Length: 222
Image (cartoon, rainbow, N blue to C red):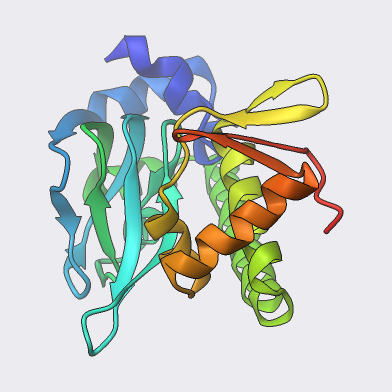
């Protein structure tokens, strides 16, 4: 498990911990593998564990009454989910599904609470992280209300690039980007609309697409 020390320490929740404290955390953690398509959590399931992605990707999504899927987020390597379940056993509001072969570090709530109660700095780090995620969610909601579809697409790709993009001079490359269907579900529009908007972005020089590799400017001037 120690080979994952740096990855775990890189999670904002744990960045304030000393190496000896990380060692304690490692002793309560375990590794789990999920096949592509595996439903890790369904909407309404009881959540009692925190997951850190070592490799792979998961999607966070909801379905409406007609069965249409809406993707709320794509979480990749180094990302995490289930942080709220560390404080209480809650039912989840969304589905979490592996979209690639995925490996996670899993920390159970009952073990985490014991560690949390004995470390004030750790507790403060968690509170700050939760507040940051809340602010980001509020900004996303506000932004989607104000942005047109083209700018929603660029906002989505920019969010992905910030998590997993590679900066090359004045561009950012996303090596394994989302499909047009995934973009459409996230942005609340049809795949045909996404295709049309992306062609416009390519013609403007804002975006280039080769298979699933996306190249975009660091700042979208729309």
